[in-house]
Length: 260
Image (cartoon, rainbow, N blue to C red):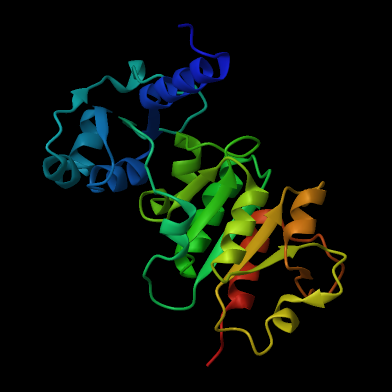
């Protein structure tokens, strides 16, 4: 019996996902990945200089590095990549489900960052760093129209990608509804919103909170706006729009945390 087309497509997608690998580059990103026991590591290419700097991490990982000439670095990286003589082929990290990250144990209040069509890996990398600093449980984005896990994202995240869950879901609106059912208050950031983050959270700082940020320019999609519990803004001294999305994520996370 011939399999239906949708079954074949699903099986092909599963095989492609299983075969997918990522090349991380740069001393910091490679060191943190080597030291991460949850990261499946496949191939390490280093120059002699980088091998000396990464000696402890390489020894701890148990990997046998391939030594490379810095003038003929063989890793399949973009020529513009600042690899610092180190590249590591890995499998993408698996962080589990929305419930796994949303209900995970952690110090401080439960906070999440959701990204709606934020495709720049440098912005997402910077958001992962802020999420780690301010204790967010995870950064969640749709599988399509978002920045995938790449070497550029990992380098900007400066190691945070190995520790800070970055979960990509099929449908962002469905993820928002799932979080609401878990008791999360979901706030979408919009410049024209009437209330600030602090005003929306007055008397509710102890609630689990998910902050949703859209791409610069178009902002949140209509479906995302309609699914959020409320739209909020960051209070600025001047007009809205002076922060890019990564800075806005950091400020919004800070504003959502209880004081004292």
